Length: 178
Figure 1: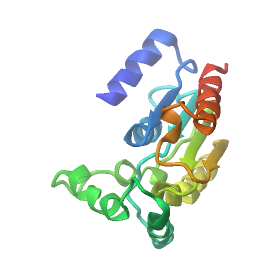
Figure 2: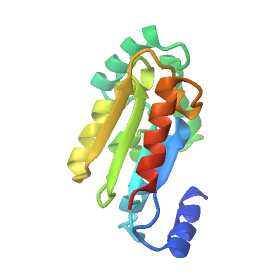
Figure 3: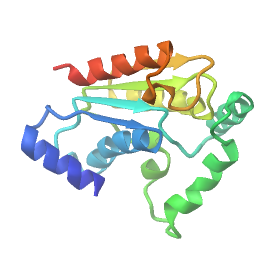
Figure 4: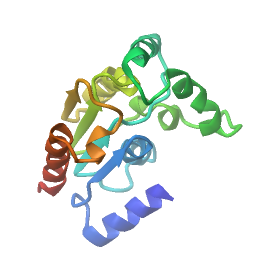
């Protein structure tokens, strides 16, 4: 359904004119569209920009698990154990779900214009960022990260305080770029 929506947007606005943005699971979906497009052999033009705010990720390697588990101590919103156990629900009884659909940092983002990550540096999901950075590097995609200390999961979706307003404004600016 999400990929079909992206297909229709590309049909309406033209290749290279569509960007994706998502918060939490939506951030995982924004990245997942690009990874799925690559897995299909890139039948559609990739997104111009992707903004992924605290994208969800099932930890898939020892380093990521250790980083995410350590951040659990400072994260008031996201439970590390949930991020591990959610894989069962995502697979819905099927073992043939592609790895990139469970752990987005295993995806291929080749052809994406650029990717912008936004996190609280104190949240569990920030532990996945090094793996997303490695995926961007493998894919040859430029990326940026904003990681604010002392913030909560997806803080910038509610731009009522200074840091959230600043980062929400950055997101709007990125999405408005040619």
